[in-house]
Structure formats: C-alpha cells, structure tokens
Amino acid sequence: MELKIERLCLDEVLSDCLQSLRSMAEAAGIELLCKSSCRLFINADRDKTAQVLTNLISNALKFSPSGTSVTVEAACSKEGFVKIAVIDQGA
View 1: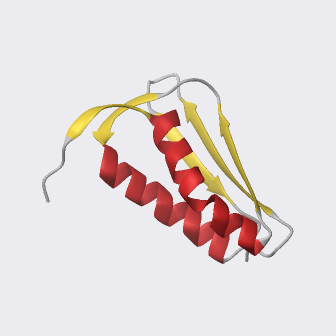
View 2 (view 1 turned 30 degrees about the vertical axis):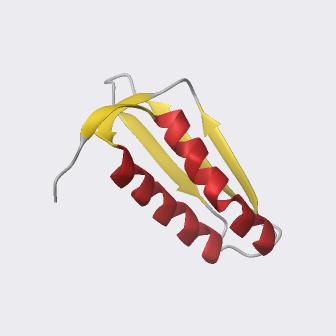
C-alpha cells in the first residue's frame, strides 16, 4: 500500500467524516458530536485517515441505541501527538 503523506488539518478531515455520516446518525436517532481542543494539524494520508475515522464512527453509530450520542474528541498532547477518541453509549 502506498501512502500519500501530507500536512492535514485534522478538523477538516473530521468535519468531512461527520458530515458524510450525519444522515446515518439522524436515521438512527443518535446525536453526533465533535469536540476538538484546538486546531489540529497532522502529517498523514488524507484518504486513509478519513477511512479509519469513518469506520470507527460508523461502528459506534451501528452499535449505539437510539436516543444516545456518539462523540468524537480530538486533542493534542504536550508531546505533540494527537489523540482521537470515539465515545459511544453502546454495549
């Protein structure tokens, strides 16, 4: 697999992923939230990053009960790493 590494604004990639999954969330009666501590930039392959995020978020939506929420949190550590968490209320 060949990766195309570039400097990405993670907030934009997350926003695109959430937008593409918003109708799935609405149909399931699940609130889709995003919390980012600051504007985050990463060096990564845009398509692969979006694929991983979309898979994680869609799995959270599939296994969460109606009336709950799925939250995506992104934050930068003191060491300069980015941590992304997908938090759901499923089993």
